[in-house]
Length: 181
Figure 1 (cartoon, rainbow, N blue to C red):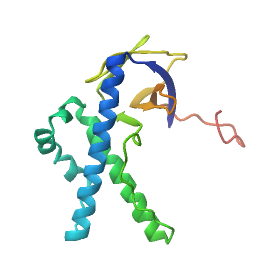
Figure 2 (spheres, helix red, strand yellow):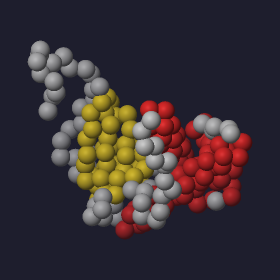
Figure 3 (spheres, one colour):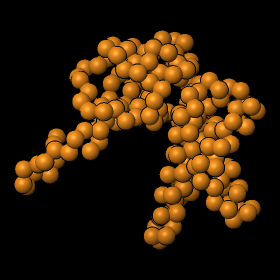
Figure 4 (cartoon, rainbow, N blue to C red):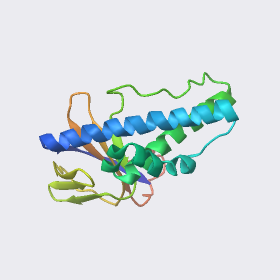
């Protein structure tokens, strides 16, 4: 069973700049991936998967060296997001619903990036993020369970948050009870 924890983080000015750049490069990667997959389908009738687009990352990094400033698994997670968006689109088409093709992301329309497995380390009062550094974090409660992924999110207010997905053991609920919280 998964549980989520959300904590406020307090990046320095230079860390905020790095995180903004990471968001922008993730947005660029999202749009590029969507464009390539759309073109492959329209021109060749070929459906690319996230693994095929992941294999394009080294070439993209040689052409756009700024991408090297983003942790590799963060960029791979962007491909996963595109993949999930397209799967949801095709599921809606198949179900006869209004499909809504995934949209390209404009500036300021990409607000989070995810470390799916590693690239981060949590210590009391500090959160180390690969390629960004040690960020101050307000841990207002203890995290119980095994951390599976971390998403760094920028709120509309300009505040930053760390959202942890944690795997906890399934808890048997008494009969008639449907949720924990």
